[in-house]
Length: 155
Image 1: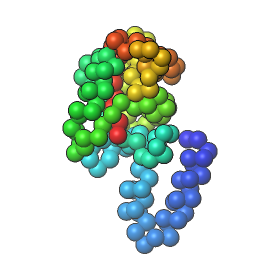
Image 2: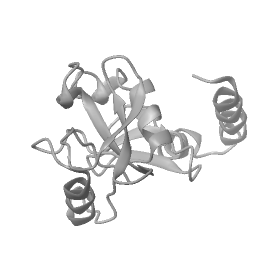
Image 3: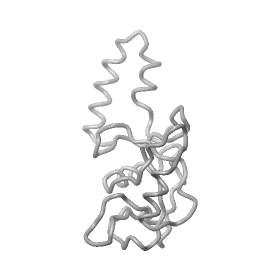
Image 4: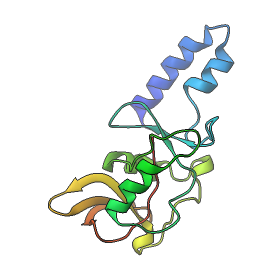
């Protein structure tokens, strides 16, 4: 865990501990990374883009998809009582990679070196390319949007 995240969590825990509802509130305010949320999605940490909780589907999309199919798949996903699913940004993919071994996320990402081990981001690169992240070694690169890669939706 990064030091600023730890400091934020400790400050919040101290403030919440003074509340008579501390145990119930704490579970809802700061879930454990990788824990299932009450709706069945997985808390994946804080989005570095929105600074709000980041939730992921517990599994990948069923098939390898092109970038445009990835955006269509996530935006059309109606799962866990939500319809606001989307392809993660480049920075959010890095969070998913960092937390890939946490609780319910453990062993759910493909980590092979081929296309299956690379995940789409919503962050476009020049021309008809978008950023992808390897879950075998954490490297980020860009790929042509017509190529097929794995996909994990977030909200």
